[in-house]
Length: 261
Length: 346
Image (cartoon, rainbow over all chains, first blue to last red; front, top):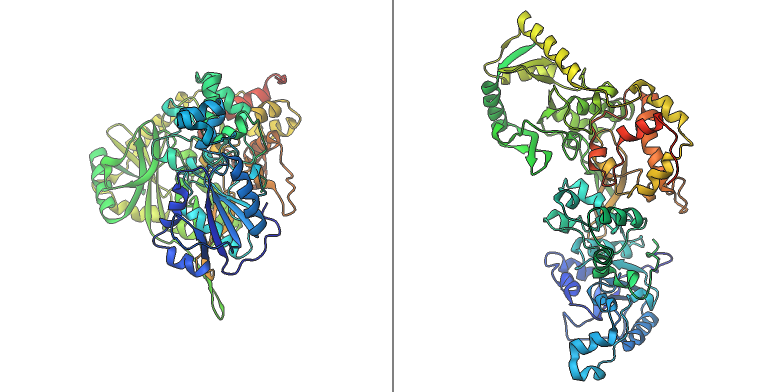
């Protein structure tokens, strides 16, 4: 990843949505103080959440959402063909996010639960992250994405630099904020194996890390899992904890490597 | 002749007055944790504090510190950023005072780091001595850091009904005028202080099976210990230890580019030898990639390299790293295990 990316000069940007809540697209629109400046740097060619004009002519594709249908894969292949650079935004696109929960059980049963008797009209496949189908040049992580991180990624791409994604875990940022550790509050947390960059947002506001940004570069999962068991978590609970956001990596499709870079 | 004695309520009043006129940071409690934070008066202070989550050195080298701003149109403009604002750092424990001495040695005397020097000049440091061990993690006594010899402008010792006040610097002497109600210390006060110190020295039970002065040699002999493998398997590489450490000083330098793509800020942020990327070089290789090597390096840097280079303790025995480690990597246990039986691999 991040290697030999072409230099972009006022690129035409397309924002696509697969299975997701559209919250990451909204985060882009929530850049109220910066949007005018952003539009000096890029031009939106396709952004259904924001505008009705559409164009198939774009340089940079941003993909939100997980692959849940066979037709999604076809769409992604087309996008990869057209765009010089492809990035994902949000947890559904990588590591797989909430849509990945479908992988915890039987896919057909999930279809029936949602669509009832009409399930056959909506063919569904096991959920995949975007980079399981096409090569992805960068990820903007989070559920939803961080506005600042989106801007930093954009400016990095425009000057031909590697987008600044921390390789280390959420704990690093959490400790810097002097938060009381979730484990010290008698709770458990996935921060020790989850990639930082969010500023430990959830633990800072009294919650704990659910792993929405996927694994850090160098997670010591066996050690964290031993700790979770010591704190009374059952194997089923630990698996379910991972599955909330990391259902592709941890679920029926088996483990896969963290993105390089 | 500069030493003073001040009654407890007089100190409270003095702190209230100081907080009205200056920025005063002091330990405050937050549930089970303590941290240094700005206070409005003595009532915000929690006197029963044990070492804070982050050390007070965060005011001398903040987790994120702007170094320069830059911009270019026709020509490149670079402005250094120095934070020279005055503040009072109240309630610094002897272990942290020793850490400040080490940082002074590195950033002031050796490196001439203007950003550190500016903050250091702005700081007036009022230490408070420890008279009993804070919890099972601290081992300052063994490291020779229970006694604060320098690093403070004023140093307070609880003497029951009041505080004995020692002066460390000229700045501290000037600060004395802010202590309303203080009187000059006399022989009887100094005698009492000696007794307090004798009692204190009894209160700190030895926790290390090795003399502090022998730790560099112990580490040099332990290069091949299997303990490092055991610790490497446990370590989460979460950086809790290095973030909490008052003598850790490594940083990374990064740029924050504005949306005009023509201006921005260069800043430094705390880095950690426990993170995989720390020892990674431009071509992608890391010369300290295995986790056990990173753990071993941390203990050697604290317990050996810094001692050899600066002649002062690199670990001040505050116990923060052991207190924060989720998987129980505690320097007391590590040093004692290295000293004791060879460790069998799990």
